[in-house]
Every structure is written in C-alpha cells, then in structure tokens.
Length: 336
Image (cartoon, rainbow, N blue to C red; front, top):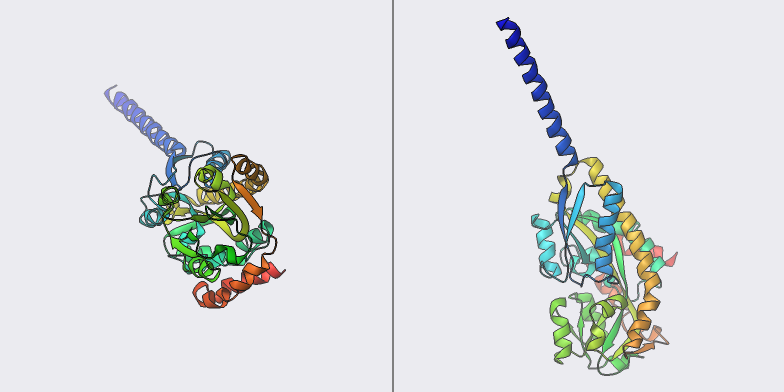
C-alpha cells in the first residue's frame, strides 16, 4: 500500500513537471518582444517618419499577432540621428527610421542619395534602392552592427527660405541654408552659390526663427508636420535630392529572434514601406495645398538643368567615396 502511494506521488510529480514545462514552453512561445523605435520628427499623421514607424507596428501585428510591441520615441526623444545610430550599434535602441544621409557618416555608400538630381521620379528611386545598389548598401551596414530592412520615403527635398523665391542658381547667392550634414550637400550648395550650414535637426526651427539661418532644404511633408510654414516665407520646388528613410534595427536585437521571426520582421517592413511610399506620394499634393493655405509662397522651378549644370562635377568627385559598384548600379538603373 505504502509503495502504491509512493508510485502515485511520483506519477503526479512527473505530470506536474510536464505541465510546468509545457506551460513554460507555451509562455515562451507567446512572449511579447518589446522594441524601442525612434525617429527625429513629430509623431504626426502626415509625417513620413512617423507613418513608417506606425505602419511597421501594424504590419508586424498582422504577420505575428501579439509577438511584437513597438514603443515609439519621436521628435528626437532619444537624441539626434547620429546618437540613435550609436544606440543601434550598441544595442540600447532596437529600431529606428533614419535619414539616409546620416548613415552615410558610417557607411559612405549611403551618400548615393545625396547626389544632386540623381532621380527624375519616385519610381526611379524605388527601383534603385530596392535593387542591387540598395542590397550593397545594406550589406555594408550589417557589417557595422545594423540590419537594414528597406527604404521608406520622405519625398524630394526642396528649398525654403526667408529671402526670396529660388528660380535660378543666382537666386541662391549668399543665402544661408541649413543642409544635411553631408559633404555632398555642402559642396553642392556651394556650387549653386548658397552659404550652406550643417546643423542638427533639433536646432533648425529656432535657428530660422532667430535669423541665424535664412532657410533650409527639406521634403514637403516635413515642412508641414514640423510647422516650418510658421518661420519661412518661400518654398521653391527644386527637387534636388530624394530623401530616403532607412528602416533599420539593431543587429543585436535582430539576432535574438528566431529565423522565422526575422523573416516576419523583413516581410512586415517591406509591406510597411510599400504602404508608406504610396501614402506619402498620394498625400503630397494635398499637403502642398495646405502649405499654400498657410500663406507660404510656392513656386515651380522652370529649368532645373541650370542647377544640374552647376553641380555636374559632384558625381566624379564622390565616386570613390560612394563606391563605383553602387554608383554604376544606380546610374544604370536610372538610365533604364
């Protein structure tokens, strides 16, 4: 009798242990992965950076319900883009939407998108960045501890300022413009006759407001979401560069995922980017009208070839820095 009781106790213990293990496995399978995602612009519905982050969260939930939770840190709450890149490399930040220009400071091939007047349309930019050139750039970024998931878009960049409308390169003469912190931007705008000043995004609004700078170059959606209409009089549609937004995650965070989860993240990012590109393109005309409604003066630039001629030497100067393989892949796709 005593032995029977001992046997029963052992069986119950085994069953209980099995249940505990099963519960642990089930809990691990259902465990939520919380990621911090950062960007530097406002968390506004029409903002292209914010839109990318929110679409990514939605697509992750569609792909793997209940698995991922993204904590949003907008408006440079986690520092500027250089600081966020450092956080991604160190593993203290999980994901971010980063302007490609800033990544060019650690992976020079990302300066490809800084080349003036490289793309004639959004479709050209998408084909280049979704193709061989983009693959090379992201492979080089992985070597720096950051995984690239694709390029969303903020649109073409244009000049806004408080001095005069820009119709020809001569109109830029002497105007003090904040530019992206890139040697290509500095050289390009010097060639166009402006006085370019690299400056952190967090400082720009106050700098324009106080007259420290006369204006800046910026995509249409960000003009509106960042309220630049309040401190700038003129918008000239120069279309000088394409503002690519890299959707990136820390390699450390990515490597903690299973292979299936990693693929789900990649698929979700691709779906989010496709949605974001479509929405930003569709919204652009509406946002431009809202900008006009604020009283900002907007002008088309009749002849962009005048600007292209002034910056034609930039391509040869930066070929070695960007890398011939990336440049040739991009130029071949643009020509096609």
